[in-house]
Image (cartoon, rainbow, N blue to C red):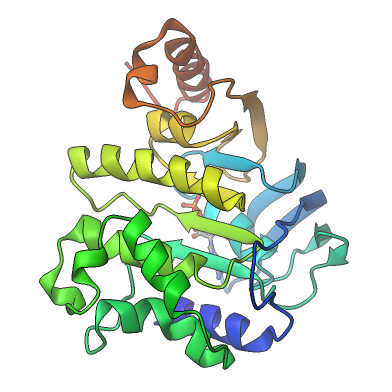
Length: 278
Ligand code: ADP
């Protein structure tokens, strides 16, 4: 529950959210950011100096081997941890404390089982003391195809439906940033494909700056405007690939030669690094 607590603290800390209407998304800028964790058995160099720019409204995937620092990077941008060196900005603000205006989705949906689906989606509004967001919550449930379950409890829903509710909750207050850390890894392959279609549709309609961490090369390409490929630890950016496909995207785009070529380019990085053998 640590992550959930952190997210709720961030929501509670922000009193400046637009009450209505579309929220302006924010740019993200990292300059020579480095992270070294100190520990009893010595320092662990998690992230090598790296610099990244994300435009407002851009959707970026990060792929990389386990332990290369992807989640660390996300925590640093969210202001949940401080970089050892370098500077991070969200919009024009240097990140020095938890960034309030982020919706975060994890592999575990972290829904509260004693609250109905609608109550879960509305939770961020309750914490912030924002009234009048029920129509927005219902609209999101509709868009996510779970409106019929608004009065159900989370335990009555499938894993895919629960994750749809978690994303709706993250988007409720129209955050400037949407961070997703392996959100679909626990789902079966077909449900995961469906969630990919939904995610890129929602990114288009919400216009939110999105950072998606995934181990799936195909998911990384399908869902994003850009894929950042990370090296093994200490993590750095090995490649930054623009994904040219128009939105909304259909799953069939994955079978095109252009898509396959991007997948091959990413795979070859991992093969060269010895992360993938085959
Ligand atoms: P990824 O998300 O790519 O799997 P992480 O960002 O979770 O990688 O972790 C990167 C490295 O930093 C790992 O070796 C992990 O053990 C280490 N690490 C992560 N968080 C901490 C922490 N709070 N203290 C010490 N080491 C950590």
